[in-house]
Image (cartoon, rainbow, N blue to C red):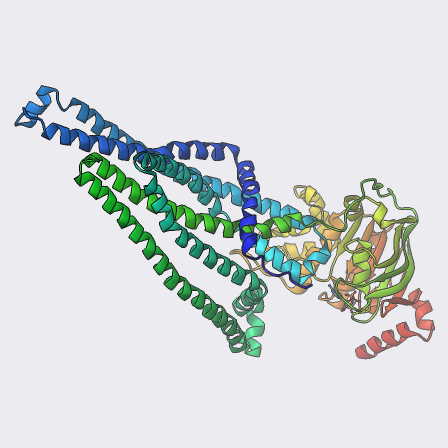
Length: 615
Ligand SMILES: Nc1ncnc2c1ncn2[C@@H]1O[C@H](COP(=O)(O)OP(=O)(O)OP(=O)(O)O)[C@@H](O)[C@H]1O
């Protein structure tokens, strides 16, 4: 899929529209915490100006007192005269504010970290739920992988934005209070301040945009880089990497990508260093211009010493605050752009979904499944994976699909489970198009174990319960499924039995052999009370006897249900009521084993080829 260009400069400002929905997400993550946070920050916002103002009053009061003609000589004298009482009150007020400000700061940090944690949780859950609802086709598309990768990053990477936006609101309020103070003295002071800061803002915006575009362009390469690092250093690939001596190759490829990123990063950072140093210099000059004005006014007596401290303090604080605000504002705009990725991901809608007027799946299925002139091309593929495909699976029948690699067997299963919809033709269930049925009910009616089933790094019991997770606590059901799939014998050898953690991802996990994993996976099929059971070659790693036994039981236990088996082993396939031979995406022949062997066709050829191998 063609990748759209990275959003341009103007899009950054437009991206600020993403902030309100983001705040809504934060609010939904925890209204109580978010509300508390806002209240705390509002109070905190007005504290700096209050403290500075009291500081000014203290200085003016001291200046007034020391200018008095009749001054007490001792501290006790000052106190007894009552002259310092107003001063004492002012100092106490200042102290109270300082203590409160400290405490509020800590409370804000505390609420902040809790709120961020809640946001991670709520975003992660939303991401997982949304991913689960999307089409399988999406996951097999590289463009989607990039979007998912970016969205996943956003769940973690955008979290500090909560803090940033809140801090921004708080600082804006502080700026307004300070600004009001400055304007009261001289509006030009504020103008001077802004003039000093605008160049910095523009510079910052520019570099943020450049960095964002670079990161955006790099998503595919970054995935490759992460992938290389992963296969270079994980237990899954360690074996092959060692045997084939792939380390140097992987490392060099990683290094090549990493060096390119590094060089690009360095170039941007260098330019940023030079430009920003110059722009900030302008700001400093303006600040000292204003400082000179204040000093002059104090010398000529227009301003008091308290005014001097208040104004120079305000000016300094304001400069820092506004600079911080502008840069974090432009940073916020950049962050908001990243949010686009997250929203775009959440906006993605699955093409495969239930219709509003979907029908319930019949219980029981009476006629079966019909493929009626089905053709299917994988998204983006030129070639048809299956075409002009027609056959019928009668309800209650056990059918085996055979065919060479790439013939289209797995594709048939995916179409049957409606993981994909046909490009042409129809798949019918009891005479009606699969698309007419409720999707959840359809998926519940079909139990498939794929050849690339998942090995969950969980307990053995959970690996089986995955087939019907609602029955996770139903141990007898899990045990009976295990028994039918011959997995009980595997579990009997595990130190902790059903509660044994399997897989090597986590500590205490015990890895199983390929065949042992398969038995656990097959048990999943029995956990599910599905009307149509499909085993898509999850038995390849079983030894011949085990596969034979598994299939025989499968045949017995699936009596009354429709069952579909895919295997390359003819000894297993021959047990089916009927065998369908798939070749290049079409039905080449069908019949019982004996009928097919009697004919001089593809089946007999393949069968004899395999039989020869055993002679
Ligand atoms: N996700 C996919 N994207 C594009 N093409 C695919 C995809 N999956 C399969 N194909 C193609 O569709 C064709 C049929 O593949 P399918 O997996 O159905 O074959 P199969 O009969 O199950 O093979 P095997 O015996 O090797 O499992 C193949 O040519 C394959 O390259």
